[in-house]
Amino acid sequence: MVDRIVLVGAGQAAASLAETLRAKGHKGGITLVGDEPAPPYQRPPLSKKYLLGEMEAERLWLKPGSFYEEQGVELRLGVRAAAIDRASREVVLEDGTRLRYDRLALTIGARPRRLPPEMGGDLGGVHVVRTLADVDAMATAFRPGARLAVIGGGYIGLEAASVARSRGLDVTLIEAALRILGRVACAETADWFRALHQSHGVRFREGAVVEALEGVGGRLTGVRLAGGETVKADFAVVGIGVQPNVELAEAAHLGLVNGIAVDLACRTSDPLIFAAGDVASFPWRGRRIRLESVQNAIDQAKVAAASMLGEPIRYEPTPWFWSDQYDVKLQIAGLNLGYETVITRPGAREGTCSHWYFAQGRLVAVDAMNDARAYMSAKRWIEAGRSPEPAALTDPAADLKALA
Image 1 (cartoon, one colour):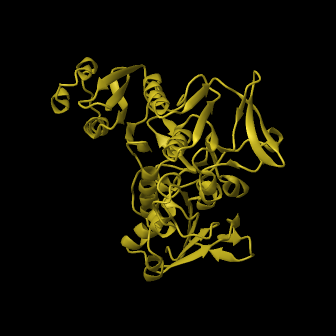
Image 2 (cartoon, rainbow, N blue to C red):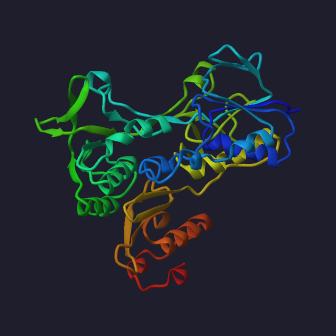
Image 3 (cartoon, one colour):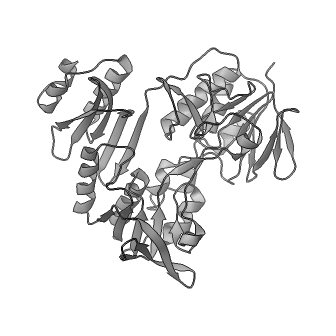
């Protein structure tokens, strides 16, 4: 019998898990443990509307405060889970509290990678973007005319640059690889977004390795690059990826593979412990992957909740993502792993475009810029295992519905 369920981690996946458990009729106890003082909240608006002052903190909450009381979900916020005692089936909190569980879910997410202290990563004015506290700490620096160095040319870095330019900051983006978006997108998409940002005044330093962050009086003054150039900066945003929070699972001797390893039912190597969200890696089309997205956190948590209650269910997603930069909405369907060919489809309107990824003639992903029709068509085809004729995509007048 499943009586008491403990959820460690208070993000999107935890909120989805708690809601799904109650919706599926679980009558036992649910305790949600989070190391931040806030209840589960949306992260995507943090670096956009919240940072710009266009959204109050309370509007970030995924559920109103009354939801947890009404649903009988106990919140233990502002306290870290220190250990898992698998023998006694208890979670030990840092304040010494022990929470018994019949089923346990780890939705502990990931944390931003930081530059090491010996490189100046601990200087004042060096920020990362992940939590409410992170964004609150940098908000006052976003003032017109301030000099911002963005370190990292992934989507986090590009989004930070777009917000900064919209506020009138002077922005230089530094990327160690030869081009931006090197790990996540094709060269065509990278070129498109570089041109977009340059049109808004962002300067790029690609193939530029950060040698050290320089400071005076403990505060950042510039970023020194290998080769001798120093980019002057009043503050910096570091967006060089994240690492899954596996320490709790590792200490409990759970299986780890690029995160906490789970099966298609979101079960870890311990059949009573489940994982979902950014921290969990799972089997997908012959490989093991870990997805960092809102969609994955929500949908994987739903599968974990069903599995906890004994429902036979498998997590086999069609991944999708999005990014907002200036007036552009990028929508991504699928994963471009192993692609061989990229087809560019011009949009029907100015400022729209899509890039279609093919592997052995099969459509595997699309990047759609301000082109919802391309995104939706590609997503449906990928889900159905169908592919349009690549050459036909180059004609913007061709009817997408007819191509498949």
